[in-house]
Image (tube, rainbow, N blue to C red):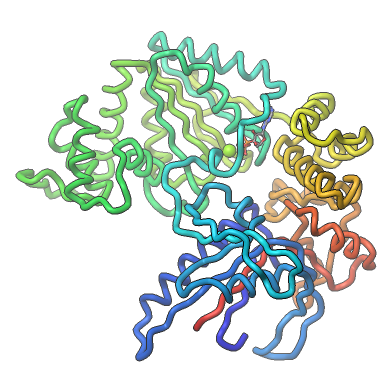
Length: 496
Ligand SMILES: Nc1ncnc2c1ncn2[C@@H]1O[C@H](COP(=O)(O)OP(=O)(O)O)[C@@H](O)[C@H]1O
Ligand SMILES: [Mg+2]
């Protein structure tokens, strides 16, 4: 659009992490434009907002073809972009909430936005935050844990066995938002008073092609690398981290190499093939781990294996094979589409998390509402019915209803009527397709025709905020099969 670019996230295909993708895309665009070699200095500003928009018929034809977009969100994104400094990424309040603590931000206070009656909070994105797990950055364990007594008991039993020197592996499988991370957080709480070493590894959907990413980022966290550290400083910190286990010089070199650091000064690196080097690196990592575990029992949490890279899986292969002789409990979490090769081994237990029973769901909703506005019985029932026992959805829908109720906009019923699209609804695959279809039928969501692409069920009202209820009801009145698709994520940026 002129000197600007308009990008949607969540339309035509929705992902559970669209707001995060939008911010990452913004960061990448700023960096890419900075690197451009142009006669005149080019700098870019980015504005990002989240909300429901209605995407309608195509306007124009050929390369100039655009789709009509209706809704407050595009306007807000464009205005935020206009007030951003060059090279800044400015995001709206609800986008900020959706990306949690994945990034570092600077509050810009309340800003006046043309076209909106009241001023709105805005934030500048400073960069990616380094120190957190996705669970800590995006979710919370503030509400009490509901149910899961048997799972807790089983985990504690495995920990006792591991502690006594017979290492164990707990595989925790379950759909997004079912409570895998929460269960591991609970175990960490239980063990607070016990002497043990904790290793935490997080796979990330944005680093699946980066070999050993979870291992590397754990080492970087453990050694307390800071973004501005010179390589020599980092190497010093790494050696300090590794020192108590007096690694062989070669191991130190291999681990330094893994972190893209120069090896120790006088060390003359051997000539070895990449394959051999990888094997030796994995051995070095395992030696370090075993040596720590021999001093004190260790709990290792390896999160979200469905996003793991092949080399990390090789690392786990070796660990699982040897764990029985170490006081280590390895807990690995993943979604059902991941098929771990370790099931059936004596030291391995597979735990599949089921959805919460109805009565527990009601308790969860009531606990979340807590001291805030009491929710009407029929609203609670409706939340429970629509969220199908998935704690994350229970939490999100309850919060959306509370916001609307507290803002006095609504008695909650209309928000509940605005069905939250589950994250997995946005990313079709063979296993989730039947569930998607059932969900659509039950909630009377109809396929929308997107010109040129046939019937589709994309976009959605996931994480809808209260102010979107008017749009939702408008959507509800439109005839099924019309060319309308709801979409939650939206971004705009423009070049100057
Ligand atoms: N049994 C439970 N009781 C209370 N809250 C829960 C429970 N299970 C999950 N939650 C909450 O639901 C959200 C999603 O859980 P999470 O552990 O992040 O899911 P997963 O890791 O399986 O994607 C979190 O905010 C978590 O605190
Ligand atoms: Mg998780």
